[in-house]
Length: 596
View 1 (tube, rainbow, N blue to C red):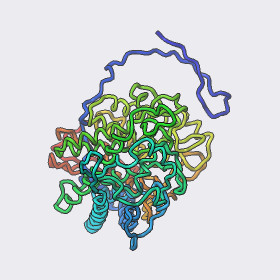
View 2 (view 1 turned 135 degrees about the vertical axis):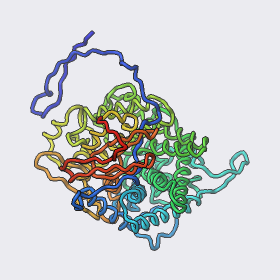
View 3 (view 1 turned 90 degrees about the vertical axis):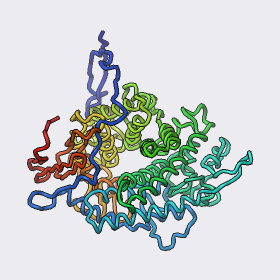
View 4 (view 1 turned 60 degrees about the vertical axis):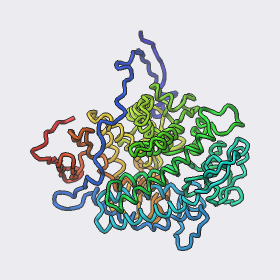
């Protein structure tokens, strides 16, 4: 049975109420009853350290090798003390001899710490990528310096106290602002005021490590609004900044784990720091917050309301990193911490709702094949979807896979522009446009910003991870290739050693792309200079995948590289004049080839 449906589609704003359309809608049962794959990926990327970018056949650098080499020099040029300043300031330690950071990591900025996390990731990715031996030595030294000092400060929170039952235990995240009355009274908190937000690690709770006091995280439980002024009540995406720091520590672990003695020691320390802070998050959200929407305006701590707040509730990919930590601890045989970290990842399930999308819950609607994306803030929501795939891996709950797959399909077909990027709205270029309204956005806007670089960075992560579950479906890597080459590679001034990157990537007619959001000293100058710190040392990250049984090798990208597949003792080389030359693939006589 078909149902007639009449409506309008927004076009170029020249037609009143848009273009009239009519359709007959037939609802049919799903052919496979919403089957999802196994929660263990079919394929995974070849480690970055096993894939080397190649120059052109004549030995000349191409855009990829030029950018990578220059970007490693930029990362090495950042003063490591600048990346430790806010930690020391937050923990009440002397900052003498430590350079003062700027941009969105300045001491007077509530987002401080976000660039620190991207710097940690950039160090690890550069180390794994194409760094020269002397550069690798410097990169490793910086990773050691960062993790050594971070762990020393974290251990300052290991303070014991006696609870109301007379039991001595470590002071935990739940022990401060532990009831609704105390959280409601936080409207007087100012983050540069030592009376209301003391820089005293004895009060922080076991395992806390962050570039800002824990009050910034706890304020979101009182639904504090988005306000970046340190002198005002409010927050600036507190869990977003924390996520970047945890993700950087996990990246260090993943890159250095299994290495030599020095590398392994740094890897284990990075993991310990991240795990202890992850457990702080579990402790706080488990004991002090609740599932669902707040029942009234006077009841704090309801997570759907917290995460639904614009910018204030932005938490990056906290669910992803906590689930990844859970996976690591499970492999190490620590089932208790693994279970708590996985539970902590589910505390970031976002069923907040927007009036622009009909007030339908974000995760719940996507799990049930309903598009709830239009007009949402792109980079607030894409990382959350990356996290659902890791929640699926840990829990085997099919709703998480359905959320990720549906989101990707909707973005790919309804919201992305020709280059693969997203973001472009009459009121805010960081938000998704209306459904199928890409041409309307391009025709009616003349600004220099669209297709935010951070959104592209996170869409690449999501696409890579989905391809691991579906390596025989070429649509994922076709899209990945389009977005990588058309936006990410071009988002930095060629050969820049000062991280001159694009915040937005203009595709409007007669506009010029701006690459001015970064600088040589502050990776956290903006969010897009932060992701830019990572983008240009990992172009080859998804070039190759291998099957779980190590019998199949997938070429994901046409990109001039040499890959080393240790499991089969095989090297594979792609050679071309980048970007326009024919690609030649060499794998030797032991390989058989099949095109997907």
